[in-house]
Every structure is written in C-alpha cells, then in structure tokens.
Amino acid sequence: MAENLKYRNPELAHNIASKIQSAAAKTGNIKICHVCGTHEWTITHYGLRSLLPENVEVIAGPGCPVCIVPAAEIDEAVLLAQMGIVVTCFGDVLRVPGSKMSLLEAKAAGADVRIVYATSDAVEMARREPQKQFVFFAVGFETTAPSTALEVMGNPPKNLSFLCSHRVIPPAMELLLSIEDLQIGGFIAPGHVSAIIGLKPYEVFPKVHRMPTVVAGFEPIDVLMSVYMIVKQIREGTARLENEYPRVVKPEGNPKALQIMQKAFKLAEGSWRGIGKLQNSALQLRESLANYDARLKYDVHVEEGKDIIKGCQCHLVIIGKIKPSQCPIFLKACTPEKPVGACMVSSEGTCRVWAKNVAAEA
Ligand code: SF4
Figure 1: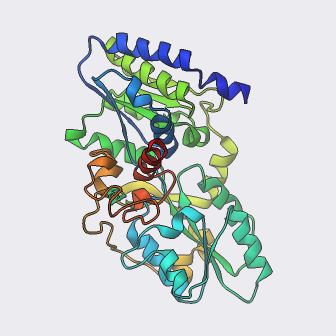
Figure 2: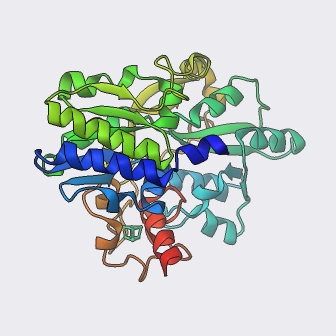
C-alpha cells in the first residue's frame, strides 16, 4: 500500500508535470497514444490530462479487449448458446452488442449463459455437469491468453471447448501509425501486456517507425513519467524503446506464459471491431487442439457481423480519432446502464471510463 502511495504522490506528480512543460516548451504539438483501458482509467480518474501543457495530448487507442471483439464473434457465441450449449464468459463480455443481440439478450431469451471469474471455473463447471456441452468464450489480450492456453493444454474435459477471441496488441499499434491524420508522436505501451510479452515486440516502433515508445505502469506517476520520457525523446530528436515499469516488466517478459501460449496458439488474421482485419493479430488454437476448438467442433463460423450500430461512433473512439464526449449519443442514448456501443460496456472501455468519471464529478 505504502509502495502504491509513493506512485500517487501529488507533489511528485506536479514536479514531473513541470518537467513535461519545460521539455515540451520548444516542441510542436505532440500526440501520445496509449493502448490500455487501465491507462485510460488512471489518466481520467486522476485528471492527468489537466496537468499537461496545451501542446501535449494523450489519446486512447484500442486498449479495451472487450470493446474490440467483432460483432461476428459475439454472433458465434450467441449461436452456440442458442444451440443449447452452455456458454461461459467473463462478465464484461455479456453485454457487448452482436449483430442482432448480445449474450445477455440470448440469456434473457432462455439460453444458458454463465459468468465465470477465471477460465478454470469453466473447466470445473464442465466437469461437474458431464451431461452438458460447455464453451468458454475466451476474450482478451496477451494478459488473459496464457490462462486459456494453460487450461486447454491441461487436458480439460471433452465436453468443454473454447471459442477463442484473443488478440495481440502490437499489430493494432502498427495499424494506428498507418492512419495519417492521427499523427501519433509516441506510444505508451501497456504494462500488463508487456509483463507477458516483454520488450522485443515493441522494438519495431523506434527502429522502423522512429516512434518513441515507453512501457508504463498504471499509477499516476508511472503514466506522467512515461509522458515525460516520450516528450524528452521528441525534444532530443531520438526514438528509443524505454521501460518505465521495470518493477514488473522484464525485457524477456514471462517465458513460461509465452511458452504455453506458443504451444496452444498460432497467429492468424483477426477482425477488430472498429478497425477491421489485421494480419497476425488473433490467437487461434493449433490444429493439434482442434477437438477443443468450438468453431470446428460445432461448425460455427460467422464471417461478417454488424460492428457499428446506427448513431454509434465506437469505431472512431477505438482508434483515438474522437473523444467519447464527441459522440452525439454519449451519456444521452448511450450510458453505462444502457450501453449502445461496445466502448460503454466494459470497465476498460474509453466511453465507460469517461462516463463514470463524469458521474463521479457530478
Ligand atoms: S458513447 Fe456509446 S455509441 Fe458513442 S462511441 Fe461511446 S460507446 Fe459508442
């Protein structure tokens, strides 16, 4: 606890903010992008944007693993539930809109959809009820993929299979750089994903794209420091990969987690809501695990879904092109209680983070 307070020290925060101010005094406009729902929470909750000079902006990219699940994959989970299979998932996934309905709506219509708190809960349920077929709808970035890999490699019961919607972050960061009018000047890389994958996957950003990239933790001091480190690099005219979060992130990442992921998954093209298809961005179960692949086991494959609902601007929020408050239905038709778009569903969604903060301030 005392350790955490150190990273929330207001005096230290103001000192770093004035260093950012000085470093940015002779630079042009700088747009820094993070790709992590928890970073957005820290920035919004602690009002860190108000400490930054006018020419330094921090935007939120596709950092919410639930928001970017394409409607087609929600549709697959709904189809499985409607086939009488018990679909298990983390709570945040329940309300993500599909083309026609969410899993919550499928549940309300009688399907057996159950919330789990860990992948192992789905394994236990399937063991306890061998007469039923179970599917675990596996959503998340490199942080949750190792637990899916661990369970699927651990000889789970035959009445359980996995609908994998895992995605990896670096391809989405590369995509952001190809959106010309975003004009990103630096990346804050997500600490928890980096704790798994290490630093190597980010080397491409400074080396190939000349993009300052700093791996950061989740306390306010971590985030401010990472902004300072990026602004300083820009001021010096350099582009390096730096690790602001060495207390958790090791250069090599977590070799055991990487090994189990490597055994369970291969990289494949994956769709991202609001972004489209990205090569080598989805984690697909290997052929040797085909018996546990729900898509193959039940022949369920939805190619195209309806990602964007009328009036919804999630596709622009997800890539950091607009702020949630610029969506015409933010906190009008779309609220945390009645989300319209995916970005309002999860606690990691940019719109939900903003909405909760507005509510807390009111
Ligand atoms: S306010 Fe709702 S509809 Fe608009 S971008 Fe956010 S989540 Fe999507």
